[in-house]
Each structure stands twice: as structure tokens, then as C-alpha cells.
Image (tube, rainbow, N blue to C red; front, side, top):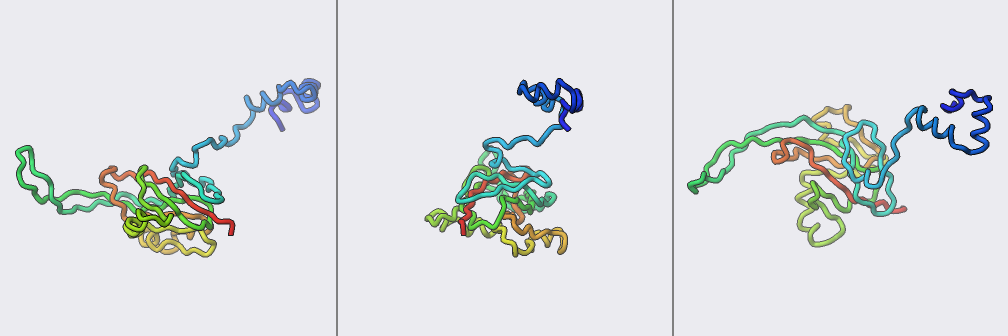
Length: 208
């Protein structure tokens, strides 16, 4: 029942007359006193990376970008110490070796409804890190990216990520069938203080 009907009564003359004349009073009252509905999606919302449980998936057709995705798995920060050369002080002395703390995380980002045909481009903090459009840049750099990242096209037969199962255990990781997503393996987040970087994706879904 609408808020106007609750206030005036469904059979009241005021409720009936204002609805017939189209004065908009019931609509105003519904907005003012009625239950709040979901916020409408605004232009550019899909480019924002989120970490919301149950966030809806984007449905794509053709080639679409930018899509921000939603963090669906995120390991707690893991620290390791690495021995590396550090530049000398103000006097310009020789570089010295010392232990430096590094922060790593394995995480997964859901991108859109699958199955999709391909991830065509991926940006990490606005820097292009993957390009599958068949150009020289992609040929030279994609292998480096795919050494640390796994891409799932969202088929209805895809299996759970073995990398996520290693951390959370077999049986505790969904297969996310019907969802295209990316898994980052032990991503070095030292420069970001352990924060997950912001990714944007360009994906392609052919009619077939």
C-alpha cells in the first residue's frame, strides 16, 4: 500500500481525487514517507572498483570498458624480508645490502557476468598491464602479467581457482561459474602499504 493510501485511506476522497487529477500528491508522499528504494546506477559507476558482498555483476555485450570489478577474495597482508641493495647516504657512499620488508597479498576481483570471449585490456592503478588485441606491446608484456595473474572467462564449467584453494582450502572456494574474474598471485603491495590496487578492465563478449 502506498504512503498516501496509508495516510488518507485507500477509499478516502482526497486519495482518489488527487490520483484522478494527477496532482502528484501521492507520488510526493511516497517519496517523502515511503520506503527507500535502491539507488539508481549512475554513469561511470561500473568503472569504480568495489568490495561489496552480493554486489551485482555487470552484463556486457560486444567490447566494453572501463569496468572496475568487485573484490571477492582478499588475503590478509603477508610480510617477508628480502635482502636488497640500498643506495648510499648523502655522502654518495657505495650501495649497501640490507633486509627490506615487503608486503604481499593474493586476491580475486570479479569483473562481469560470463562467459566472455576475452579480457582485451587491463589497467593497474591507471597503468596498462595487459593488452590482448594482438599488438607488439602485448606480445612483449603479456607473459609477464600472466605469470602473476590468472584470468577466468566465466564459463559454466570452470573449476575453482587452485591458487585460492591453496590459501582458503579445498571446498571453501566457489568456482564462480558464470562470473568472469581475475586472481592476483602474491602481489607485491609494498609501495601501496598493503592496499589492493585499483584495476579497470576491458572485456569482449561475442554474440556466439
